[in-house]
Image 1: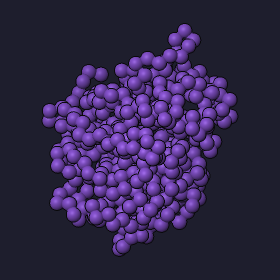
Image 2: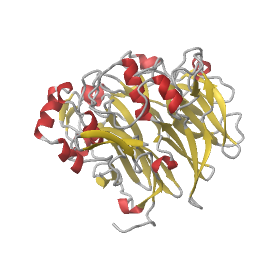
Image 3: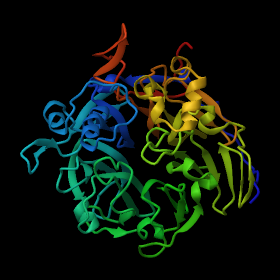
Image 4: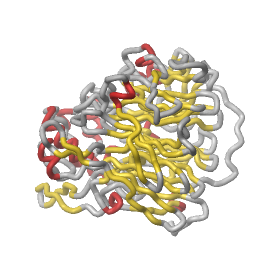
Length: 506
């Protein structure tokens, strides 16, 4: 299939540059355990942000349970070495914050309750809020905010769906056992609306399986408050290789879903006509014929008549469990009629013909270390794509004897210190036509600990961007040949606001 140029009128505005952004919060809203701005939505004149807490501390404790080894020479953050210590010493209660742009004020409006588990430990009901979507169900009198959650594996009900009521209060609507008819799942990653329905998808099978689902399916309902949920598709879209549905988005005419598959992601679309489960059509296969290096369709965004698919490899670009990578991400564009192009990525021959990256930029926007294209959004006629960049981790995890030969040869040629100095922090890029791309910032908004631009929201007040920054409260540094942990005022998630009428000195 030959790439086809489509007519397009570019945006009349110049787009956002880095000097159009200002930081609205820092250091995890004053609490470094708020590591990820994991979800974001504009609702009722406010920006809502859901956090996930203590990501690196949790990974450290889980590492001791599953004994995977890994390539770490030292943990990037200080924290407990066992799960029991983690529950006792670290506050992992996820939070929801609300921002009023008119008075430039953040307010904590919700924090996860604590509950006892069967072993008597007091644990958070939720450690993360992963998805937010504005929706009006049949029993709702107005549009309101629905939130998908991430629960510790020891929570019996599994993950919940929360609903905004009143002035910043949230109520439990459903839990995973009720939604699925008995299957418990710890996390829900997808939250999207299409036509008169809301859709969620489970993610995570407990333990180290953060991206694999016990049930790889989309659930849907017209009325979340009544708890009547149905399968929107058959499990895995009929393919056992689809381990979970990672990303969804909608155009006016179709709902799109992207999967996690070790042979390369798949992308499916449906007009959701009739009753569920709906009829779906596969539009991308085997990671757009890049195979396992396009393991996950991690972000989907519909822009100017086409779907843009950003890829990732779990583990920030190197899947040590399945020995995939390291590799940079790709951006692929696919039209509803089936024509598709590589926008950012590798040239290759495919069953649909020879593909060249139309941007003339290689994988990862030219960087091996952009292992995720993590989030994308349209704002004022421009498409923005944010990455997860793993090079801030290299001081801590590089152990050459545990890498595949590809990664080992690269590190033999490039000094770790050089990479840290020149390519540290997440990257944000923008395009007015989908083919020509400009960097907004390639250094984590000048904070090397911002390893990812995790979520975005286009609002009447500008484009909000939330970061992933798990290097807090204390970060490992090497002094006189020894590792020690020190307070890190640059750790914790940040939320930035970009708008054209704001400009600061370059």
